[in-house]
Length: 159
Image 1 (cartoon, rainbow, N blue to C red):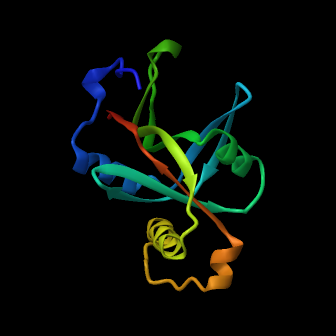
Image 2 (cartoon, rainbow, N blue to C red):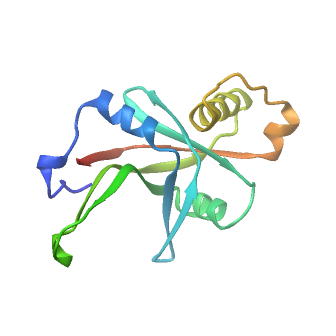
């Protein structure tokens, strides 16, 4: 990722970055589909593994998103929270408060049943606030779970 233009707004503290991720209810996952952008909103879970932030997602076992994961193996994601418009007396004087994350990295399918259970627990913990869920084998077999390992991650805050 290229350096952030407004470095005065960049957040580098790992704990603060994780708190911003925790505050974002969902994210947008983006792909390049034959040179054209394709972006979808998705629920997510996350963990720090070997010093890198890893994001987990789930969904149907087929479709455009699944084809792009299989074909490209790379994705980007974006999330934000706390958006608030700051009004001004002139059009170009408006601004906005926000905190945002942008990440990119390899995206791959999770096939191992135990890793799927862990990933789905992380998604449910983030989405529903609880990790105490059971995932029977039939449920694991019917859902596609995939992960994005953030090779690059930037965080920006403008309050």
